[in-house]
Length: 314
Length: 124
Image 1 (cartoon, each protein chain N blue to C red):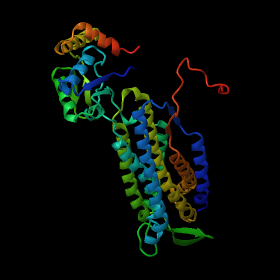
Image 2: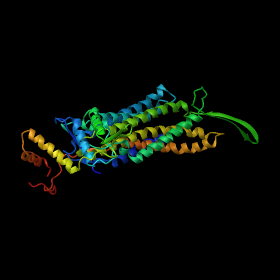
Image 3: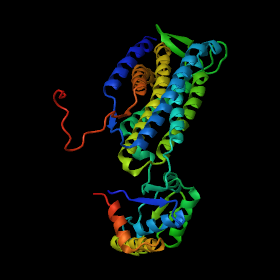
Image 4: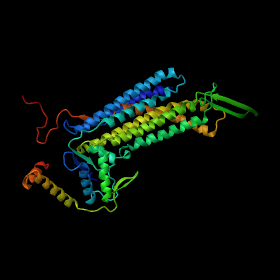
């Protein structure tokens, strides 16, 4: 819980850092008009998606508890934010069509998802996904029914221990535990999110190229869009991983007859939980500040123009 | 690596698939596109040019029949290992110039007017 509270200021710090390091490409007032129009459209839809995702995630956090007091809906809030951004990206990329003139030019090239993928973020997302898969699998494997018989909601143990030289039967159950009760809906949502991520990346790659004169800027736009798609997916994965891992720490620490694997798992989730929450906060901060193309208000001076230095002559 | 481009003029009486076929055949035949180079996927090229996928698919089919490219399911369309080498880039340019002069003649204009138009359009 404490880590969750710490995540909010971390998100603000990440937002500030992202704002300071924001990528802005400046173009002249009459340069690459078509690419600028596409950039505005795709960015606009991405922001609409982010806003809808934040509203959806907020509703799941606030109202989800009323519908399902055990938190299954609340756990889907990060995925809702990620899905909002991904859907916004898909709509933006599919509807941003360059205007077709009488003479149409296309570059002979094969655009692939790999060519627009930021390597670092892709690696991070792959690692986070593996970690989430591992945590969900461990939670499902070690889960058992709780006192009301709900499958996969508690961590039970039963063994014989030597206490003061006397063999003593130890049995107990601890919860809430992120077993199948929570992991199955989370795994299903993660699957949908993975599909959305692939769909969004394909939409980014398949968007028709505008005028070949703006080829470089168009490639930059695609890399930005792909980066935002990965950041949205990363936020959803880390935002899910953080609470699930944090929820595992206490039941695993209280085990009297835990296996060596569970002992290792305890240390892993103790480190993973806070790390994932910090990462999710940073990803949210980065999502709020997306790169953009700025259009200069005044045309650039031509060679031979008087330099704009000194006071105007009266 | 220099990116090559193809242009389609929708007002040109030559059908778009033929305009595209001629340009791609020139790029392959003159060695600008080397054997094994991958051509854009049909849907991508069609979207970039604002044409229907069927038009680009027809171009690729004809290029395959003439031995310029090879298509493989799942592997895309690639330049054939031994495509027919029709011309060098200079020869291809002369061919295009001949077609241009022929068009000027159809419009009732002579070589001087055609050269003047070319001169006007040449970036300085």
